[in-house]
Length: 110
Length: 115
Image 1 (cartoon, rainbow over the protein chains, first blue to last red):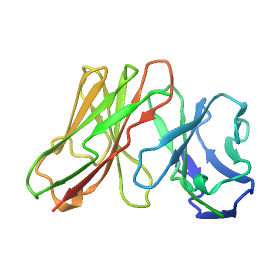
Image 2 (image 1 turned 90 degrees about the vertical axis):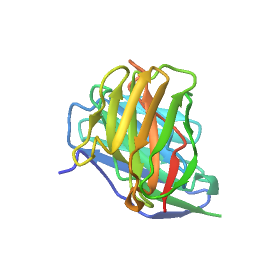
Image 3 (image 1 turned 45 degrees about the horizontal axis):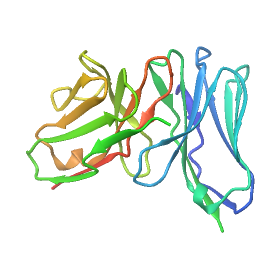
Image 4 (image 1 turned 30 degrees about the vertical axis):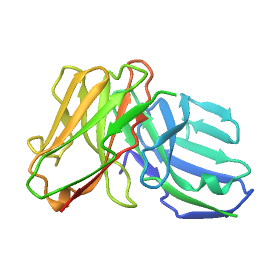
């Protein structure tokens, strides 16, 4: 079993839709959770960083962590064509080792 | 947010030559730096982890004699691909993590094409 599971998609939504991206994990020691956005041929860009459980909101983006279910989510409200990218979840237990999902490819159609 | 740069952004070389890629943390001290490679439409594959002043720790299956990593300072790490072959053509991405921040900041990546 992989440490982190993420549906690769592709996911295609109309502009303005709410997008839900998810990852599950198996290691209960993970306590640092991150979402990255990667445009084609670019390095990943940190979008959201969450420690332990709970929600974090930043503009149109909301990250949720449910440690009891070992499940994290990223919600994008009012999605825009510029949100079209690959979204990677990542997590860590100590901050020394990081485990990435395979990435979900998102296309927002105008 | 923290900024990481990579140089060059794209390099084309002949088979058998060596290529050096630089990774710099511009506004923070990267205690740990990571090197990844990524094939088209695939996820990141961790190659090695390096701590400043120490030898890099390579992932299983990564040849340490082929991919030489040097992390000489808290702001600079280099990856040298020795005797490059066409199968080494890939997108190489570095990232840095500052002690205590528990997240990584990625560089923009370097596209390596070996002819």
